[in-house]
Each structure stands twice: as structure tokens, then as C-alpha cells.
Amino acid sequence: MLTIMPEQRRFSDSELTNMIHSAGLRPSIQRIAVFSLVANSRKHPSADEIFSELTKTYPSLSRTTVYNSLHALVDAGLVRGLEIECGNRHYDLAPQPPHSHFICRKCGKIFDMTIPSGISAAASPGFCVDSVDVYFKGVCPVCSKEV
Amino acid sequence: MLTIMPEQRRFSDSELTNMIHSAGLRPSIQRIAVFSLVANSRKHPSADEIFSELTKTYPSLSRTTVYNSLHALVDAGLVRGLEIECGNRHYDLAPQPPHSHFICRKCGKIFDMTIPSGISAAASPGFCVDSVDVYFKGVCPVCSKEV
DNA sequence: GTATCTGCAAATAGTTTGCGCCAAT
DNA sequence: ATTGGCGCAAACTATTTGCAGATAC
Image 1 (tube, each protein chain N blue to C red):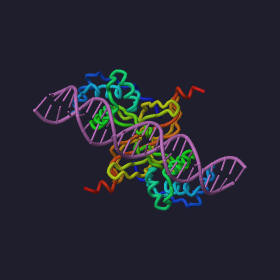
Image 2: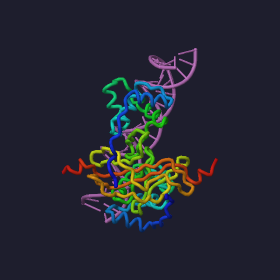
Image 3: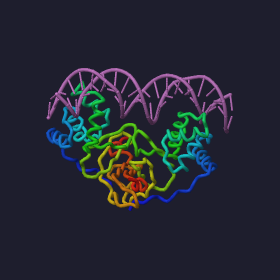
Image 4: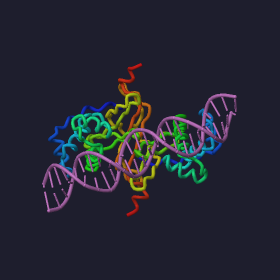
């Protein structure tokens, strides 16, 4: 049965800084800000949403830096890209218990959902499985209620 | 256990024509060619691959027409887009038994795989599920053998 | 002091749109 | 005759690259 995932805990800036540092990256203001938004907003933001949100606080932040930071964080294994909506890539905190994603086709919101049992990177003949992504599409509870 | 799907049968041009016609679309040469490539090539081609392949046979074919045809076929429910690789959308025949997809991170080839048991659009509290996409990533048998 | 990071400007890739012409019903 | 489809050119969006100055260690 597919259910919504329990809310994960928030990460303090010093925790995020440590994680970035442990990954061998310099914990710049910009990277911490990008990582914090991805890890704590629960919004699975796109690069553009991250840029829009962070320029409120850091008006000099550039799009290039958002992309640079995201790439660095993805390469470091701290963030991962969701390919649930081509042409509008969303990002999620990587070190998390396995879960699937549900995107509402009305409001576009993405929800963390439990991962259905039975899915595993289980041995397959000759195939070496690195990752599994499960994407559900439909209408969320809020949009279902609306006429 | 994740295994490769048995090869599906090929569709003749007249079958494809009928499917396009039944969907309320005009079965133009271009649409039949695009649909045929998606339905029969088993390659899950991208728009660009379709364009490159078909201009060999139809040198006057335009990119716009490939996009137009794909959109028409998708809207008609005959073709569906795979979002397995953002920025490079691939297309697959839609009227097919449920299956998942495996993309090889070395050669980029996409394989049709069985769908792991346990995945279903099963009732969820308030969520109305329209579709489920399961994407595996890893290394395919051919690339595994290579040094 | 040196390697790394930021951010501007310009380039690129994939896709979409506007529109005139052609083809099918 | 009218509707729908094709394809050129141009626009658009998301992302990447080259590079110079700034920053952290």
C-alpha cells in the first residue's frame, strides 16, 4: 500500500556544513544555502526555484552558481536529481531512507511516498542495478477535493 | 526477480495505420514512419534519433514534424514518453503490457524489463494514481563483460 | 600563494511557436 | 471548400562553458 512518508528531520546549517566538508567540498555560503533548501524545504525544488528563492536572501547569487553547487552536491552524493518531470529537473536530499515519489499533475507538487515492497535491486541475469526510481503520477488529496 | 521482457511482436504498417486512424488522427506518411520506429525498433528512440533515422528515408522530413507527430501520438495514447534520462526524452509504444525500464549508464541502451511484483497503482489515502514508472539504472550484460 | 569557487557573458541543446503552403476529406 | 498537417524560421527555456576576478585555506 502506497502511503506518504513520515516527515524527515531538519538539518541545521552546521550539520549541512559538516556534510559538505566531509564530502571534500568547500562549504561556501552558496553551497550551504542550496543544500539547505534541498534538504529542508521538502519541496523537491528545481534549479530555477532554488535560484528564485535564494536570490531573495542573496541578491548577487547567479544561476551558474546554483548549477555549479547542485552538480558538486550531486557528485558528492549529497543530493540527487529526480527525473519525474523532464525539462524541469527537481532535486532531493540523497542520504535518505528509500522512498518513491508522487507528482500531482494538477498542482505539480511532489510527495515522498513509501517504496512498495517487492522492489529491490535484486540480482538479475547479467544486469548490475545501481539504482531504482519509482515515480507515481496522479492527483494529490488536496487537488482531488477541488472541483 | 527483475528479468528482461520477452520480445514483443512487430506491427505491420497497415496495423499502425489502423491504430493511428482509430485514434482519430490522419495516418500521414510521417506519422506512420515515426510510430513505426517507436513501435518496432525496440530502441526507445529520442526525438533526435527518430529525426536522424527517418531523414535517411525521407530527406525532407523536418524536426518540427517529428515533434508534432510525437505529440499527436502521445495525446492519442499510442506512444508514451520515458523520463528516464532528463534532457533526452525517449519514447516507447504505449499499448503494451506493464513493464519497467533499465538504462545502461555505459552504453545508454534502454531495456524493457518485467515489472517487480508489489508495484501497483493500489489505493492510497486520498491519492489518485494514474501511472507508475519504474526506472532501473546500472550496467547491462554486454557492458559488464567489457573491461 | 595556490587551488578552488563565484558569477558574468556567451554558447549550446532540446523543444515550441507562428505562419504560409500543401494535401486530404 | 474547408479542415488538418507539413516544414521553414525564429523564439524560448534549461543548462553548460570559458574565463576573470574574488575567496578560502
